[in-house]
Length: 273
Image (cartoon, rainbow, N blue to C red; front, side):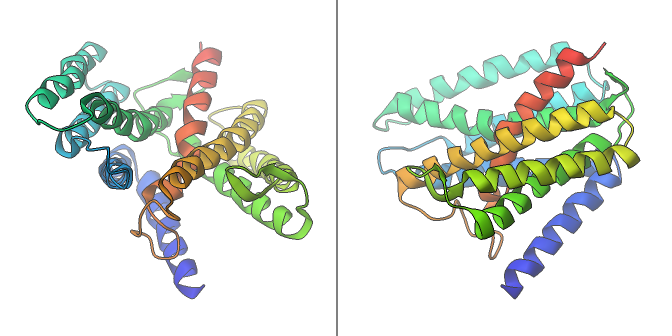
């Protein structure tokens, strides 16, 4: 328990500090997370002996995708240069021709899925660092990114506490037997309270938007957790990795982010001027 608490504290401290200090420290941290996350994804799917993804190609494609999209978000590079990602993605098909591995298209699918599942949500989240007053700007602000993590952690904490003390009705027993409807409601309530408190200090978006982001985070984060649980259950593993003692791996720590962030990103794109 002590090891879990220490790891969690250091994890939050590093994350918040990097995001607070600006665009480049956030970029560097997210690059590390993307690198470790994609590599962990491939190590996880290899537990299914029929899958043999292209580790090196996938990691390079994921990192390149994230960096190009991040530079475009900072407006230090024209968006047209992200089109270089198209041949990079299709290079995966060509490489598979020369690998002489079984189940070629399964290998290709899992290689590209690792990039899509890990790199793109983090690229979207990084872009949200440049969202201020209903539009994207060249100026980075930590508010929405840190605010999102606070909402996500509030949702997880509320769900854990409410589920532990009041949980009776199973939410999705086939995938995650411990999750309950009471836990989800508790996560939603605490996340909405957190959204209100955040709005008092972070003014890049209005209170109503923080409230909507809280709802999206609760629903998307919960579904992201279930998706990751489904993946691990299919492979008969408990944790996606052991990088974070007491917490599992990168995919375990960010599972809610992978589903919640694309919906948050889409919402803010729609309401932007």
